[in-house]
View 1 (cartoon, rainbow, N blue to C red):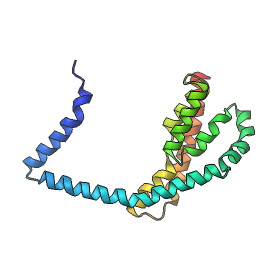
View 2: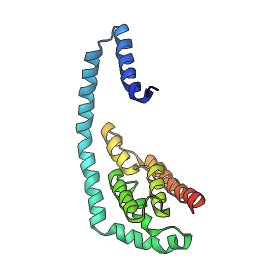
View 3: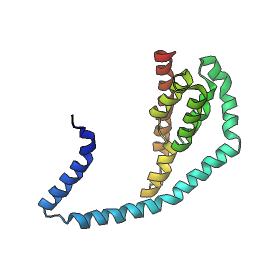
View 4: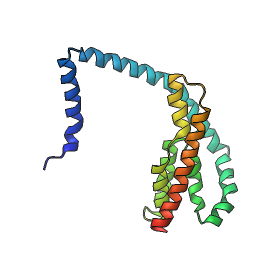
Amino acid sequence: MVNISIWIIPLLIGFILAYGTWKKVPTYEVFVEGGKEGLSIAISIVPYLVGMMVAISVFRASGAMAFLSGLLRAPLDALGVPTEIVPLALIRPISGTGALAMTTDIINTYGPDSFIGRLASTMQGSTDTTLYILTVYFGAVGIKKMGNALKVGLLSDLVGMIAAIVFVTIVFG
């Protein structure tokens, strides 16, 4: 049986090039122009990316992560939520790479089939890097007012985290 997933992207690209040529669009020139635009966008994103990385480093190095984890320990213990998940919940809206590193550490420590491992994996997949998205993508296109997007993004992250806890508890608890 032919594995269609291997061929779908090359076929799609070939179709687009053939269609553009059929419509008499200068496909190579348009491709090069798009590459130039993509490169300029990538260069404009760099300052926002560096700023976010510095902010994450300061947050972790200052002890704020440990302080917030300590504040949330008692209420989470009362709800039966493992406190080992708190650093992941705090870093996930900020940094995808940092959250992935924390998830990897949790899985290496507790195992992929443990409640905490499953919760970390589910939380990783059910939330997003809201602050990263806002700083990088909104900054790249010059959007200055992002208050409502921030509120909605962080609320959706909170809902995703709560949903992860509820569903993992129901399915694996």
